[in-house]
Length: 336
Image (cartoon, rainbow, N blue to C red; front, top):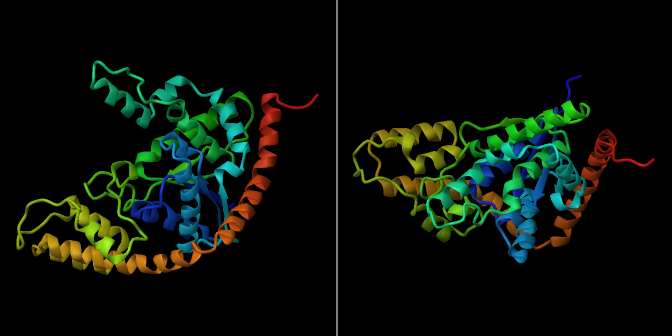
């Protein structure tokens, strides 16, 4: 019998998911959860959000909104383990154990930490560590614990997160070498289409850049947002390069092969930017409408969302408890 693959996905609870989250993480995770040879672990990474967010109300509200979003997008809680990170204390216990094995040199190479250092180095009068918390520095360890606590085989991520999965592999292998073979080194799974979905300004779509496309906005707001996507100055009638176009990249992530081929022809024929954006808006509205309708229904029933997460957390604890006991014993933390 073929071994079930364990797939783990999480989203930080720092605001309502945007289009990049939807096509890059949520929908692929839901699709993977339907496969017979797959065991899916999907979680709300609420403790990760504390790294950048000190607004407690936002953290709490976002946890609910994100859970409702996943359910509205078709997640079947009976087919997956859907839980809050904060409901599984074993994750944080494992993070400490892994931290005691992880070299500072490895964490020094983390992209987010290096970027923060580089920003501070631009100003010679600024402390090189300004604004850098231990939460930011230790982020890769907590992410590794999220993954390794459930011995995930596959972690779907954007290209920018691939390094964290590689770090989790290194940490797992180091633990297995020092103690015993208890942790599964994970593999990253990156979609060619949605590895990094561009935002309105061409950078990665991210709340940090304020360049996202909302998925539950009304039609007027959605259209206004799409019209803000940056393009070049080519005139109508001039052929346009779809490979470097933000509008086309976003359209490609949600359209069928036939629709993409037709849109490509219109680019070759010199479509105007106004028409290109209108086409994207119409496709987005069609694509998002079913999710919006379901979301509006689910957010009126908070008790349902809470019960789903509690059931999922109980399942998660059933999975993590046996492994954390083995890990404790392996490192020497046990009764006499």
